[in-house]
Length: 166
Image (cartoon, rainbow, N blue to C red):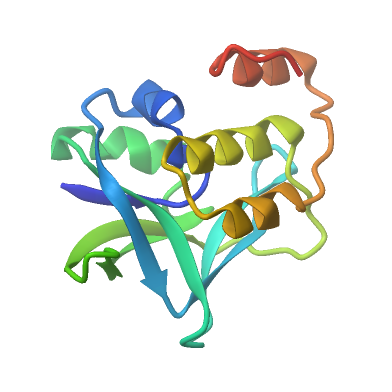
């Protein structure tokens, strides 16, 4: 099974906590979509969304992973399939010109008044840097305002995934 990660799951350490079989295949582009931090999470913060705009100048960059289809229910649960995100197949493009289809999760709980927690933004940035996304794209992610998580235990667990302290 092929899965396109464009948010916190771009980070291999983060994704492998959920899907141990995840194998990175490379960086791909999703044209006509825009990265937004407006998915309203159950924890009260914002998570990433690949928002369809239809605008040819927009694109979401991310990572395609190959994973064992038997692990999909775990990923569906982590992504709150049906209540936070829905899933669909999309066509992605690689810089070398080839295309492939992969599964993405897209937000169905959208609010413009939510802000990501700092640890979540860190996961997204770690993944973006791991796969060497273009610096302009990384700077756009860096510019997103984030706040400390009031749940310090959760924050400590999340920061520890990358050996960082919040």
